[in-house]
Amino acid sequence: MATDLIQREKPRYGLFFAHLALEKTLKAHVCRATKDLAPRIHALLRLAELSRLRVSLEQRLFLAEFDRYQIEGRYPEDLISPPSPKEGRV
Image (cartoon, rainbow, N blue to C red; front, side, top):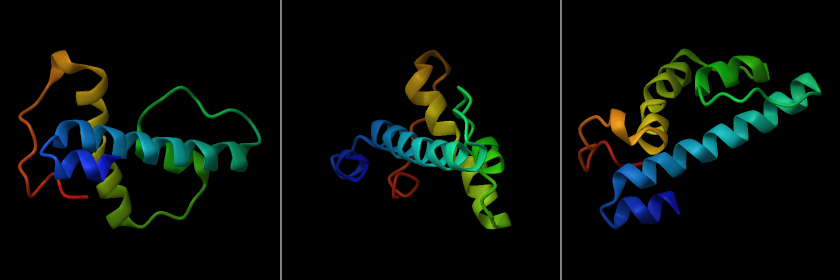
């Protein structure tokens, strides 16, 4: 879905759904690692920490940068400039 939206020149929505997929995946890892429900947060880097997954520095930087797309999808009043076509590629 995310790739399709990006290809249809709707990068804001596509990247939001890509963020959502990463968030849900990380929350599943948090549940597995903690044997409890994941917290109601959207911060990918924090979820990765709670999941106890080994995350490289490059991956940590990516997760921190990618968090801006959850803000756009959930809080449109805080919109930043739309991503360029180059930035919208997943």
